[in-house]
Amino acid sequence: MSVYAKAAFSASIAMLAMTTAFVGSISRADDNIPQGAAQPTASTAPASLPVSVAYAVLPEGLPTLTQPDPAAPEEQSAPPAQPERSYASLAALIADTDVAAPLDEETRCLASTVFYESRSETAEGQLAVARVVINRAKSSRFGDSLCGVVRQPGQFSFVRGGTIPQPDTSHPHWKRAVAIARIALDNKWTSAAEGALFFHARRVKTSWARPRVAAIDNHIFYR
View (cartoon, rainbow, N blue to C red):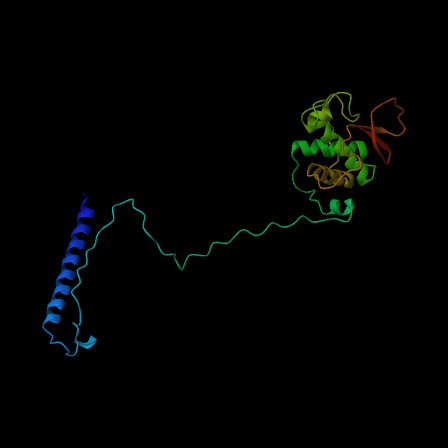
């Protein structure tokens, strides 16, 4: 038995002995009271009882109960998630998209494709071009990254020897291309050319037997 357990046990024995002695003294006093005599009232009871208090020190490592610190700040719950904003048009979404944040390489490759292939098209036409690049990256038939898709030989006419030219980043069309790239990557707007893997200009005559998805501005899109 540990020192702490012995101390607690001794205290309990002492308390039990004192309680037994007190109860026995009361019983003996009651035996001396004549039958029918008035019983002692609360005021005639002993003013106080001897109390034996044993203090035991808890061994280190045992859990202790603690009271909360009133001075400590209350823990704040996380704010509820804000619902995504809805936009009346793609143009409104573009206007609300951050184009000043730094671009990673993949987003830059996608924005460059939108800029060089469709900067004269409407926002819907530019989004469709961006979706083609993303769809190709997800397909096993092309490069496994956006930049790999864009640099693939013979796919995009603005790429020369696997090199993507540096666009004029101060041009308003570049800023819109960046917004379109971010919207397409975040899938914030549905394109009329969803699922398309190919496109060409309307002026180009082809014998493609691929399923046609949409015709937007000056481009025709296929699966």
